[in-house]
Image 1: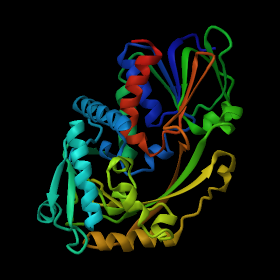
Image 2: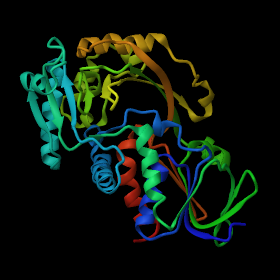
Image 3: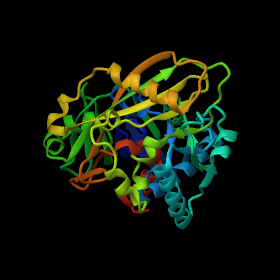
Length: 386
């Protein structure tokens, strides 16, 4: 047995797990972080890296706004690649203009900074927009973007500077015994660790460790498809670009007075609706552009129905629709990928406590990159009664 007793053991080094580790360390606790791979390689690194509280309902927007502070604070101490170029929602017709105007008023009441932009102001800021598409925009200057494939590992390096932190990569946890005074944690090589509290922030380990709870949950598995265009030599697209289909999808717009009636008038069997598509753009440091995404769903009991195929028809739709929105130098695809994350049908996150010591926290859905640091800040305070 490892002779060290940890205040907190975290299973899973994705953004949700690493955020809990971060805040526990900030409270002076001794923390162990376990990751079954060499480094995180699932949903945390397979997304846009858009940190957009503007897209969330009031509860999660609050967490997202706290996350903005946390990301920026870490970046001020150690470069994790934060770029504050804001987010814009581009309206393509009168209905979407109505929705962004209504959301602007909601933001104003919530004291969240946003700016309505005219068509001309949108073009001043984003000259590559297609004039036939863009009618107006709603801009959020405080929001940020990161490269998730780089950021998460830099945050981990930042945590490693803390003498109270221990990281165990390539370590598959096979059992957590919480019946006694402490959590006794065993890995696949029969090494044993001890902690006062254990947090499980990984869907894969959750299923293996607590099979019954996993299959009795209301978790839904969600498959996303995305692509990246080869670098553009001259085109510069700052920040997060969200479009009309996003306005029709994101939770923040649900509170708009006209949202329900506008949704009811949409074509029921459109390709984008059938595949859960909305169009996002984000340019990386090398000039490449990430484009997507789509959503396919399966209840946890049918999770194996989520296949691993990339659908050409979806990628073709991404490019076709993106051409209507933006003028680029080229549309040559560098690569394509899928990601799978979990969310809940009835709840906004899955949270179950076992023996008052093991906290299973997963199913955060598409909110992870934006809301995890803020959510974990509050959660660590609750768990350890700070």
